Structure formats: structure tokens, C-alpha cells
Length: 339
Ligand code: NAD
Ligand code: MG
Ligand code: MG
Ligand code: MG
Ligand code: MG
Image (cartoon, rainbow, N blue to C red; front, top):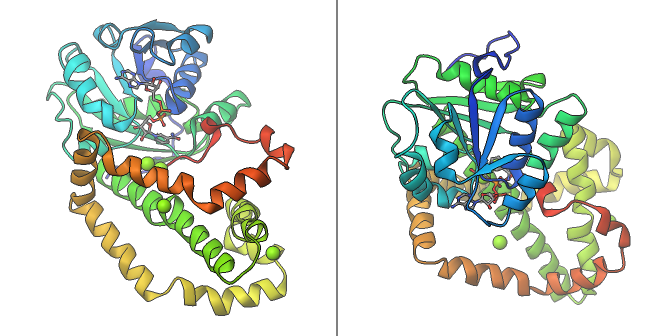
């Protein structure tokens, strides 16, 4: 792992170089526009007539096919969904990338789990903003930035780290903070966070709480408010000031209940199962299963997703949210959490 240097990185290492951003979704759009506004030479690589190519053109960016975008680029940012990256690398990147160019990822999955074995004559780097694309763009526009992780997997030119830091500067991250990491740490912690706590853990906790109240005879509408809707207030307090701020803002009764009942819900057995989830991530079991599931056409993924969408908490939630018009103005999907 490289050291966290104190000097604020600049875009100098990428000045006058061509950057190809492949993908124009949550991260791709934010990176391309920020790099462009930082004065760098940016093209976007997308499938012709793909769902986002019109948007990139409307934003004033030059859109090419992925292969054409790669051909003249000095840095290629791979910002498509993780599961399409191996084929994209094989078909559009590997045959066209210039020797000495850099291949950049925002998540280390494919490199760390060897789904992409990059050519030895290129740099392989990572810059992962710790926030969704909409925030990366918004903060940049007001003159700030979202902290970024950065890492080097392969340094063919001797300048890989400089390029990663310059890219992080170009998207605004260096205005906030850059944290040095490696592909293994970024990949494993990102997967663990989304599985155990953010997406998997939080949604199962909410659903179990909802079912407990409804099975005990309470109204589903009231259960929904108590365990789903109000979670936002608590998470906002965590986000702004950690557990300290949450404890400052909730009642003494809520605090006492937290202290005595929280550890009965999440206990040593929960933590042991978290460690088992982490082991599956670390030893490649999760990556192997997910890759096989994707290649099989997502049969289980689709079933699991439909079951979540059909759950009674979603039925009651939809009806209640329709009566809270202020929610319509809230986050679009692209504003949603980063995992
Ligand atoms: P996304 O799903 O929002 O957007 C994907 C983009 O890729 C779209 O423009 C889509 O049209 C395009 N695309 C799909 N298939 C393509 C193909 N075959 N060729 C060219 N373009 C194609 O993706 P995202 O959430 O921005 O994720 C991109 C990367 O960033 C991933 O590696 C992800 O893990 C990482 N990441 C995402 C976030 C986040 O907030 N969403 C945060 C940190 C890291
Ligand atoms: Mg679930
Ligand atoms: Mg309450
Ligand atoms: Mg994440
Ligand atoms: Mg993730």
C-alpha cells in the first residue's frame, strides 16, 4: 500500500492527455463532466444508440464507440456495470489500448478476482469516490469534492500513482481527501459493506422488524413508519455526526432501549455470521457464485428481486409514499447510495 502524501495532487500528469470514459451512468457522467470542466480532454465510449449515448451528447460531450474511444486514449476509465467489464476489456480495450496507457477502475472487482487480466504494458489503477455519481458532480460544481480511494495494481510506466492522483484531482476528489489503498482492500471492504450492513443487512433488519410488528397484530401502515420510513432520520444523523449525533437527538427512552435491546438483536452470533460472509468474499466464493449467476442469465437474482418487490412492506409502502408528495422531489435513482 502506498503512503498518504500531504501534498495536494493536481491534474498535471493528465494535462494534454486524452481520457476515454467508458459508460455514462452514475459514475461515468459525473467523472466525464468533472474532468472536462477541469480542462482535460475527454471522450465518452458507448454502444451506438445505447441508453445513455444521447444524454452524453446533450451534455456536450464527444461520444464514440468504446473501441474508437480507447484507440487514442492515454487513460481509459472503465465505468460500465462490473459484470459487463470483462467482455468490454476483451473486445474493445485489449485490442486497442496504447502501450503505456492507463486502465482505471472505480471498483476493483474484476481485477482483484482475475476476471480481467490486463496487458502487461499498461498501468492499472483505481479511483473510487466515496459517494454516488450525483454527489461527485454536485460537490465539484460548488467547488468542493468527494473523498476518493486510490490504488495501483500494475505500474508499467513508473507513473501509475501520479496518474491515479491526477484523475482524482480532475474529478474533484483531491479537494477533499485521497486515501491510499489496494485493489484487494477496496474490493473486499466494498462488497462486505454492501452485503452485511448497507443493502443486505439493513433491508433484512427492516423487513424482520416489519414482520414482527404485523404478525403481532399491529397495523402495517404504522409498522412501515416505525421501521422503514423513520430509518432515514437515524441514518441522516449517523451521516452527519456518527452515533454521537444520533444519541444527542433521540429521547432518553430511545437511548435506554438502544443500549439494552440493540445487543439482543445484533449479537456475537450476528458478528460470527458477518465473519463468514467476509470469508466468502475473501476466498472468492462470492465472486465465483456471482459470476456464474450472471453468466447463467440471473435466474436466482431475478427470483430474489421479485420476492423483495412483492413483499407486503413494499405494497403498503407504495400506498403511503403516494400520500407524501415531498418524497417525489427527493433522490432520483442516480442520487441513491453508492454501493
Ligand atoms: P451505471 O449502471 O450507473 O452505468 C453504467 C453505464 O455503462 C451506462 O451508461 C450504460 O449504458 C453503460 N454500459 C452498459 N453496458 C455497456 C457496454 N457493454 N459498453 C459500453 N457501455 C455500457 O454504473 P455505475 O453505478 O456508475 O458503476 C460504474 C462503476 O463504478 C462500477 O465499477 C461500480 O462498481 C463503480 N462504482 C459505482 C458507484 C455508484 O455510486 N454507483 C460508486 C463507486 C464505484
Ligand atoms: Mg434482502
Ligand atoms: Mg417512533
Ligand atoms: Mg461501495
Ligand atoms: Mg459496490
